[in-house]
Length: 159
Image (cartoon, rainbow, N blue to C red; front, side):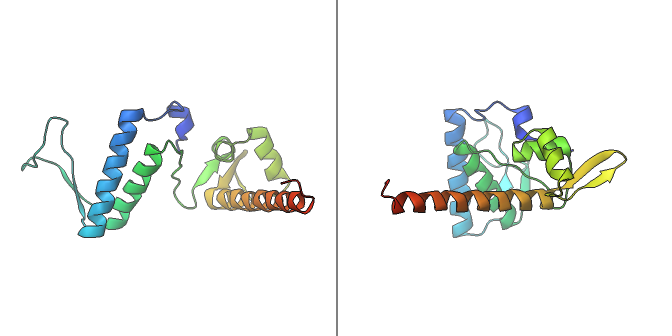
């Protein structure tokens, strides 16, 4: 089941100290990736400062380390993010949460054919790819409308 971060964490996910730690970790991972192309990550206990034979070491592809660094950076900046497996079927509640709309409004969009969906019994399911495509299309329409307003205000001298 997809977990939406807003349901499980307060708005302020990290405090200042934790944000600083996340930023430092991100910078360390990125520096290591730029320097030596690491593929291992050691997990030390809070009182442990040296890697020993008992230290858990994760072997990860550099792309995964880049993803971890990106995630740490987003968290450090207080940004929200959502990880959804590609082509995941979402409930209408999950889809509405991702679009930041009510479930009834999402259901209206589905009925109008603006977002494709399938049914499982009597329940609607929305493919995550279709949902994200719709979200991107709406963002593009909004950006174009905003640019039109800017252009009109400049033409009218309303800077």
